[in-house]
Amino acid sequence: MATPNEILQNNRRWSEKIRAQDPHFFERLFRQQAPKYLWIGCSDSRVPANQIMDMDPGEVFVHRNISNLVLHSDMNCLSVLQFAVDVLKVEHIMIVGHYGCGGVGAALHGDRLGLIDNWLRYIGDTMERHRKLMDATAPAGRHDRLCELNVIEQVANAAHTTIVRDAWDRGQPLTVHGWCYGLSDGCIHDLGMDVARFDALDTGYSHALAQLTATPT
Ligand code: CO
Image 1 (tube, rainbow, N blue to C red):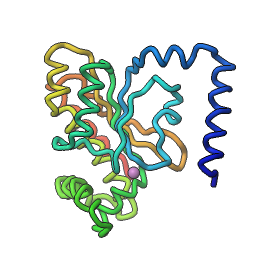
Image 2 (tube, rainbow, N blue to C red):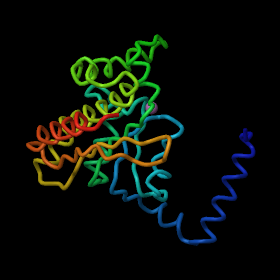
Image 3 (cartoon, helix red, strand yellow):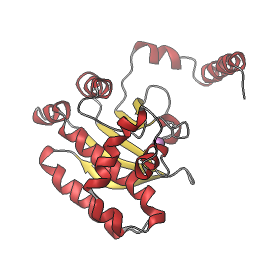
């Protein structure tokens, strides 16, 4: 494990390496950030947005919380969403879950971990909502299935916010995507839910669910 001092030294080396490749890199970023993407993902240390999308600093605006939830009462997530959509004018919002998500697993098994149980309760609600599909999934696949269902619900949540709806109403180009990342191979699985208009939400939701039903985990 690197000590904090070693991390600071690593940072200096990284900064020098970048400037050697592109002397004006940080100057440009300092003047303005203009990312076209908002990533809403899990806090899990294995799912870093920039590295997974192979993007440089400045290319993606990021919000992460445990199990990538978009809740209508979460001022932190809503503020990120509002700033990204209204001010930065991102064109794509990726809601990115990951297979094997610990928060989703805790909700699935009803683990008692403390305060976090209340946060994860929303995933319990998702499990209840999709009880039939969960029951039809082999027990070994239920954890991953719930990770996917959670993403689908969060795409719907994002699309229902006043922020996204107002952007669509004024004709701003904005698409909400549902992805699930594989820790075992580093690949993002596209859940086939790409919502670019409010009236396309129901079809996108049903399409993504139908794909899940057709795909054994
Ligand atoms: Co996770």
